[in-house]
Image (cartoon, rainbow, N blue to C red; front, side):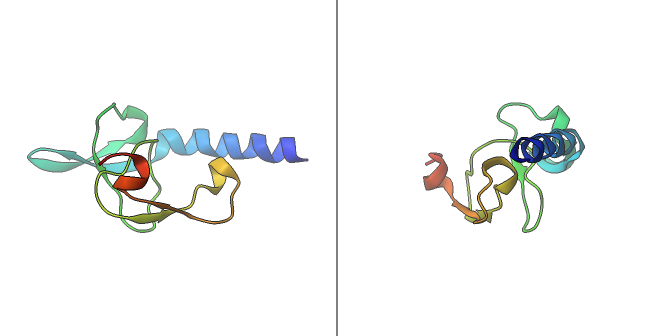
Length: 87
């Protein structure tokens, strides 16, 4: 049963990876960018309640992030530049 749940979670994560739209900071403007086209060093702006499009680090701000699909934890994680090593 646990193996089936793990496979279902992995399938859900794969689907969101290619279908999540993020607001990318591309000077001099903000542009929508599909997470499937994300590149290293892209900077995206995430608002409250939005899905995070890719793995990365927080460079500004503080948030409470639901990582349950990845970690299985029921508690949100607190993330900030200090917590991700971006300082």
